[in-house]
Amino acid sequence: KAGRLVSSNPSELASGPVRRFHHRAHPRCRVENTDSENDASPLVDPELLESLASIEVPDQAKIGGSKASIDIVKSGMVREALGEKALGIASVLVELPLPVDSKTKQALQQQCENAVKTIEWVTNPLIVITAPEGAPSAVMSSSPSSSASSPVSPFADMGNSEVDTMRKGGLKSVDKVIAVASCKGGVGKSTTSVNLAFALRAQGYKVGIVDTDLYGPSLPTMVTPENPEVAFENGGSEIIPVEAHGVKMMSMGFINPTDSMVVRGARAAPLVEQMLTRTQWGELDFLVIDMPPGTGDIQLTLSQSVSIDAAVVVTTPQ
Image (cartoon, rainbow, N blue to C red; front, side, top):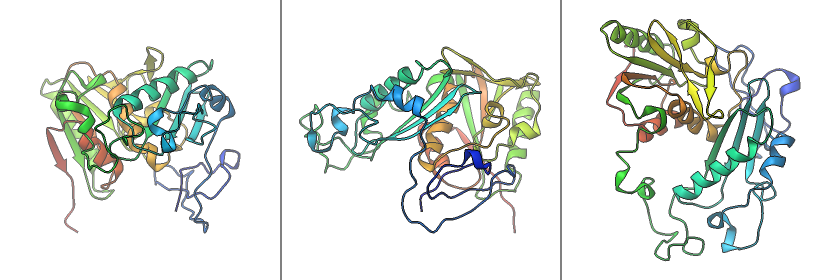
């Protein structure tokens, strides 16, 4: 069934069938499965849609290789366009119907960022572009040798330098990445992550910790930063981490401390990856990643997109 996280505040509820997820850290949300099997209607903000209407669908994503000019809004590819005006956040999800190469994805993401930044209140655009895996078809690709039926690795379009570029953006100067994970919640994973980070700091290392649980971030509950205000620089594309006792920290609970996140499944993993790579960690000896509980999309995406040096799995004997 289709579903998305929504607030229990009636004024914020979207129309259409939804699944309302619950996490104990957010009592404002609850679980309610609907009987409809139809896909949920997109969440849209008219102002954001208007800014995105100037962006044309990439040739590789046009059905049947059509050369007709059509924008991503009229084509129905903009599945979500949400605005948090108080925080300056514009969150956009674009779902392409066909496989495209990484350059096309990056170009479309940049176009969307530039478009929404024309709106006065937007300071932190969060753009997610999704597309089916595989190679662009020969009809739509500029490369005559590509074939839609040919199996291809999801990293094929990264070239031979994929390993060297896995730590991108704010992670470039991070020496070692440690992931702390668990197959279920409530086993002390976040407690272990925080204790590990501060123990390494006590030994003189430069340390950072990131809480990747969007729905129930626990880091803000466990550690009080010296300055809780998260700063954005370079037009909102760079996030400055908060600090406590010499440890750099980032969590969605610091970025959005008052409200529950509204995130569809397809957007969750890319959103966490953006938070991780856009944060300006600077030079770190260790970055501790506090994974969400379980083994879902966020965990798999981070494991594939970030070069992890070590992992700590927290479990109990029950």
